[in-house]
Amino acid sequence: MNWDETGPDTGDLTDERLQDRLVDAGADGEDTAVEAALRPKDLDEFVGQEKVREQLDLVLKAARARGATADHVLLSGAPGLGKTTLSMIIAAEMNAPIRITSGPAIQHAGDLAAILSSLQEGEVLFLDEIHRMSRPAEEMLYMAMEDFRVDVIVGKGPGATAIPLELPPFTLVGATTRAGLLPPPLRDRFGFTAHMEFYAPAELERVIHRSAGLLDVAIDPQGAAEIAGRSRGTPRIANRLLRRVRDYAQVKAEGRIDRDIAAAALRVYEVDERGLDRLDRAVLQALLKLFGGGPVGLSTLAVAVGEERETVEEVAEPFLVREGLLARTPRGRVATPAAWAHLGLTAPQGGAMGQQGLFGA
Ligand SMILES: Nc1ncnc2c1ncn2[C@@H]1O[C@H](COP(=O)(O)OP(=O)(O)OP(=O)(O)O)[C@@H](O)[C@H]1O
Ligand SMILES: [Mg+2]
Image (cartoon, rainbow, N blue to C red; front, top):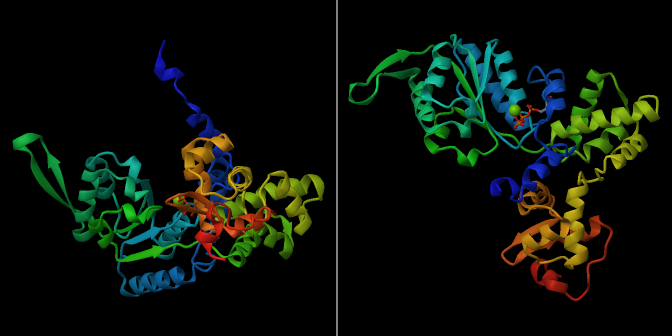
């Protein structure tokens, strides 16, 4: 018997199921297909991120005025906030072609050398997931970014020689969801770093109105607000929820979206007013109802909801923590007063299991 095949392998199962989560910020197949159509094409169309837009506008305008290639730009931020979109906008604003690749696609320094040496002057090289590049490629990139030069190594061992190769000036746009993982020498070589923040509900409403226009869907302001509030600060999720609500409206309401239709549709998909889905609510419910709000250990909590530890920790908790519904403390997971309120439950009086001690009166 092959133990490898009989071991607990629910991880994969879980992953597959979770990829279908409506409120996951990562791109699924359908997103990839429609995102191209929904992407803003220039800075004016790009909603929100006022500071980033203002700063980037200056960087690009100044480069254009000098007739120079723009400085290298690092875009950091959570999935679905617009990094890929912004890289395309940078190229469009500079009237430059764009080449798109990603850290994991560059295994060897030679792969990078091949890309770099084929760039045209002024071209934008978009390197997605730049934190996942191999070390040798990363080191080659340092020199390319700084001196527009690479050393191509020919041969092996003691006889190997480095042949310097001049590169045309180009703009590297790096994107990462984990800026903290970038080695400082790489981070320092970017002339401009943009941190993308989660979007305010009003900004997401604008994203939704814009997308609805492109998708030719009729939606009123209350309908857009209803969807925006459930979109977890993320345009990709807003666009995805809009498409699901549109389906519902087509079947039930002649295609028109208002507040009631949006709310009814998202009830069907089990996305609540705050953007929590079934898994998120299961975690909170277990924490509140079974453990009186905690503290409770992660493993115990995971067993209680019938999920893997990792699923609870990596899939459900980050958003719950961000929303101030759950706290990770040294003694275990603890529900905040907001969690009780959100599920319509009353927190036990008298500091049950440390509530008062942890959050004050
Ligand atoms: N500021 C914005 N205004 C309007 N639409 C936006 C904005 N930012 C993102 N979007 C939309 O959200 C979707 C996802 O954006 P994008 O692909 O750029 O995210 P990303 O940050 O690259 O995500 P990932 O980390 O998964 O690569 C796109 O369809 C895009 O149209
Ligand atoms: Mg992207």
